[in-house]
Amino acid sequence: MPVDPLHSAARPRSAPSPLAGGGEPGAVEVRRSARRRRTVSAYREGDRTVVLIPARMSEAEEQRWVTVMLDRLAAQESKRMLGDTELAERAARLSAQYLGGRARPATVRWVTNQNTRWGSCTPAEGSIRLSHRLQGMPEYVLDYVLLHELAHLLVPGHGPGFWRLLEAYPRTERARGYLEGVVAADRLPHLPAARGE
Image (tube, rainbow, N blue to C red; front, side, top):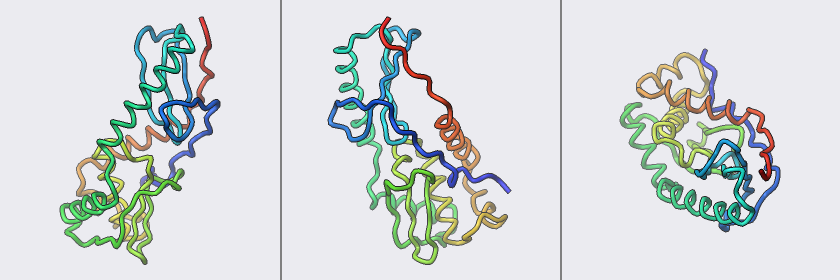
Protein backbone atom coordinates (compact mmCIF):
# COMPACT_ATOMS: atom_id res chain seq x y z
CA MET A 1 0.00 0.00 0.00
CA PRO A 2 1.42 3.46 -0.87
CA VAL A 3 2.64 5.78 1.87
CA ASP A 4 0.16 8.60 2.29
CA PRO A 5 1.95 11.98 2.16
CA LEU A 6 -1.30 13.77 2.98
CA HIS A 7 -1.27 12.46 6.51
CA SER A 8 2.45 12.67 7.25
CA ALA A 9 3.43 16.30 6.79
CA ALA A 10 6.22 17.49 9.06
CA ARG A 11 5.48 20.06 11.73
CA PRO A 12 6.84 23.49 10.93
CA ARG A 13 9.83 24.40 13.06
CA SER A 14 9.77 27.54 15.16
CA ALA A 15 11.60 30.47 13.66
CA PRO A 16 14.93 31.38 15.21
CA SER A 17 14.49 35.16 15.30
CA PRO A 18 11.41 36.99 14.05
CA LEU A 19 11.81 40.34 12.36
CA ALA A 20 9.14 42.97 12.13
CA GLY A 21 8.20 44.00 8.64
CA GLY A 22 5.44 44.28 6.09
CA GLY A 23 2.69 43.90 8.67
CA GLU A 24 2.71 40.12 8.06
CA PRO A 25 1.75 37.73 10.85
CA GLY A 26 4.29 35.09 11.80
CA ALA A 27 8.05 35.13 11.98
CA VAL A 28 10.52 36.14 9.31
CA GLU A 29 13.87 34.42 9.02
CA VAL A 30 16.59 36.06 6.96
CA ARG A 31 19.19 33.71 5.51
CA ARG A 32 22.37 35.29 4.18
CA SER A 33 24.44 33.59 1.50
CA ALA A 34 27.95 34.41 0.32
CA ARG A 35 27.12 32.76 -3.02
CA ARG A 36 24.14 35.04 -3.58
CA ARG A 37 25.39 38.23 -5.28
CA ARG A 38 22.39 40.40 -6.21
CA THR A 39 19.18 38.43 -6.04
CA VAL A 40 16.71 38.37 -3.17
CA SER A 41 13.97 35.79 -2.88
CA ALA A 42 11.38 34.73 -0.32
CA TYR A 43 9.05 31.84 0.37
CA ARG A 44 6.74 30.53 3.06
CA GLU A 45 7.99 27.69 5.24
CA GLY A 46 5.34 26.48 7.67
CA ASP A 47 4.16 29.48 9.66
CA ARG A 48 7.16 31.64 8.85
CA THR A 49 8.62 33.46 5.88
CA VAL A 50 12.20 32.85 4.75
CA VAL A 51 13.97 35.69 2.93
CA LEU A 52 17.22 34.84 1.11
CA ILE A 53 19.66 37.73 0.65
CA PRO A 54 23.33 38.27 -0.26
CA ALA A 55 25.66 38.13 2.79
CA ARG A 56 27.13 41.57 2.00
CA MET A 57 23.83 43.46 2.48
CA SER A 58 23.64 46.05 5.24
CA GLU A 59 21.03 45.84 8.01
CA ALA A 60 19.10 48.73 6.42
CA GLU A 61 19.05 46.97 3.01
CA GLU A 62 17.96 43.78 4.74
CA GLN A 63 15.01 45.51 6.42
CA ARG A 64 14.00 47.19 3.14
CA TRP A 65 14.14 43.90 1.24
CA VAL A 66 12.22 42.02 3.94
CA THR A 67 9.40 44.54 3.61
CA VAL A 68 9.47 44.38 -0.20
CA MET A 69 9.45 40.58 -0.25
CA LEU A 70 6.65 40.28 2.33
CA ASP A 71 4.53 42.63 0.23
CA ARG A 72 5.28 40.63 -2.95
CA LEU A 73 4.40 37.32 -1.30
CA ALA A 74 1.17 38.74 0.09
CA ALA A 75 0.19 40.05 -3.36
CA GLN A 76 0.95 36.69 -5.02
CA GLU A 77 -0.98 34.77 -2.38
CA SER A 78 -4.02 37.02 -2.55
CA LYS A 79 -4.22 36.37 -6.30
CA ARG A 80 -4.02 32.61 -5.82
CA MET A 81 -6.04 32.19 -2.63
CA LEU A 82 -9.44 30.60 -2.95
CA GLY A 83 -12.14 31.33 -0.43
CA ASP A 84 -14.18 28.51 1.12
CA THR A 85 -16.98 29.04 -1.44
CA GLU A 86 -14.59 28.69 -4.38
CA LEU A 87 -12.99 25.68 -2.69
CA ALA A 88 -16.41 23.98 -2.40
CA GLU A 89 -17.14 24.75 -6.07
CA ARG A 90 -13.77 23.29 -7.06
CA ALA A 91 -14.51 20.15 -5.02
CA ALA A 92 -17.87 19.75 -6.77
CA ARG A 93 -16.20 20.03 -10.21
CA LEU A 94 -13.53 17.48 -9.25
CA SER A 95 -16.13 15.07 -7.87
CA ALA A 96 -18.14 15.33 -11.09
CA GLN A 97 -15.08 14.90 -13.31
CA TYR A 98 -13.26 12.09 -11.49
CA LEU A 99 -15.72 10.45 -9.09
CA GLY A 100 -18.92 10.52 -11.12
CA GLY A 101 -20.34 13.19 -8.80
CA ARG A 102 -20.78 10.61 -6.02
CA ALA A 103 -18.70 12.51 -3.43
CA ARG A 104 -20.88 15.36 -2.13
CA PRO A 105 -19.32 17.11 0.85
CA ALA A 106 -21.52 19.16 3.17
CA THR A 107 -18.62 21.57 3.82
CA VAL A 108 -15.19 22.24 2.35
CA ARG A 109 -13.04 24.82 4.09
CA TRP A 110 -9.54 26.04 4.85
CA VAL A 111 -8.21 25.56 8.37
CA THR A 112 -5.08 26.87 10.09
CA ASN A 113 -4.77 24.19 12.78
CA GLN A 114 -3.54 21.32 10.55
CA ASN A 115 0.24 21.36 10.65
CA THR A 116 0.79 17.61 10.40
CA ARG A 117 -1.78 16.91 7.65
CA TRP A 118 -2.52 18.47 4.29
CA GLY A 119 -6.20 17.62 4.53
CA SER A 120 -8.74 15.73 6.59
CA CYS A 121 -12.24 14.41 6.15
CA THR A 122 -15.03 13.38 8.50
CA PRO A 123 -17.24 11.12 6.35
CA ALA A 124 -20.07 10.98 8.94
CA GLU A 125 -20.43 14.77 8.74
CA GLY A 126 -19.44 15.12 5.09
CA SER A 127 -16.84 17.72 6.06
CA ILE A 128 -13.50 18.32 4.37
CA ARG A 129 -10.79 20.54 5.80
CA LEU A 130 -7.64 21.61 3.95
CA SER A 131 -4.51 23.01 5.57
CA HIS A 132 -3.84 26.67 4.85
CA ARG A 133 -0.28 25.57 3.97
CA LEU A 134 -1.62 24.37 0.59
CA GLN A 135 -2.47 27.92 -0.42
CA GLY A 136 -0.10 28.99 -3.15
CA MET A 137 0.94 25.44 -4.11
CA PRO A 138 0.39 24.37 -7.74
CA GLU A 139 -3.24 23.81 -8.71
CA TYR A 140 -2.70 20.14 -9.53
CA VAL A 141 -1.49 19.57 -5.95
CA LEU A 142 -4.55 21.30 -4.48
CA ASP A 143 -6.79 19.27 -6.81
CA TYR A 144 -5.12 16.04 -5.71
CA VAL A 145 -5.58 16.84 -2.01
CA LEU A 146 -9.23 17.74 -2.61
CA LEU A 147 -9.78 14.51 -4.58
CA HIS A 148 -8.03 12.52 -1.86
CA GLU A 149 -10.43 13.88 0.75
CA LEU A 150 -13.43 13.54 -1.56
CA ALA A 151 -12.53 9.88 -2.08
CA HIS A 152 -12.65 9.45 1.72
CA LEU A 153 -16.34 10.35 1.58
CA LEU A 154 -16.77 7.19 -0.50
CA VAL A 155 -14.09 4.94 1.05
CA PRO A 156 -12.98 5.90 4.58
CA GLY A 157 -9.66 3.98 4.74
CA HIS A 158 -6.59 3.75 2.51
CA GLY A 159 -7.23 0.27 1.10
CA PRO A 160 -7.04 -0.79 -2.55
CA GLY A 161 -10.56 0.50 -3.29
CA PHE A 162 -9.57 3.97 -2.10
CA TRP A 163 -6.45 4.11 -4.30
CA ARG A 164 -8.44 2.85 -7.31
CA LEU A 165 -10.65 5.95 -7.02
CA LEU A 166 -7.59 8.20 -7.31
CA GLU A 167 -6.25 6.40 -10.40
CA ALA A 168 -8.63 8.47 -12.53
CA TYR A 169 -6.73 11.68 -11.68
CA PRO A 170 -3.75 11.81 -14.10
CA ARG A 171 -1.50 13.84 -11.79
CA THR A 172 -1.84 11.71 -8.64
CA GLU A 173 1.78 10.49 -8.60
CA ARG A 174 3.18 13.91 -9.51
CA ALA A 175 1.18 15.60 -6.73
CA ARG A 176 2.18 12.94 -4.20
CA GLY A 177 5.82 13.43 -5.17
CA TYR A 178 5.49 17.19 -4.76
CA LEU A 179 4.02 16.82 -1.25
CA GLU A 180 6.65 14.26 -0.27
CA GLY A 181 9.32 16.72 -1.44
CA VAL A 182 7.83 19.51 0.69
CA VAL A 183 7.83 17.23 3.74
CA ALA A 184 11.41 16.09 3.08
CA ALA A 185 12.64 19.68 2.61
CA ASP A 186 10.96 20.71 5.85
CA ARG A 187 12.86 17.99 7.71
CA LEU A 188 16.28 19.09 6.42
CA PRO A 189 18.45 20.82 8.99
CA HIS A 190 18.84 24.50 8.31
CA LEU A 191 22.29 25.88 8.96
CA PRO A 192 22.46 29.25 10.67
CA ALA A 193 22.92 32.05 8.19
CA ALA A 194 26.34 33.73 8.14
CA ARG A 195 26.17 37.37 9.25
CA GLY A 196 28.37 40.13 7.84
CA GLU A 197 31.28 39.78 5.41
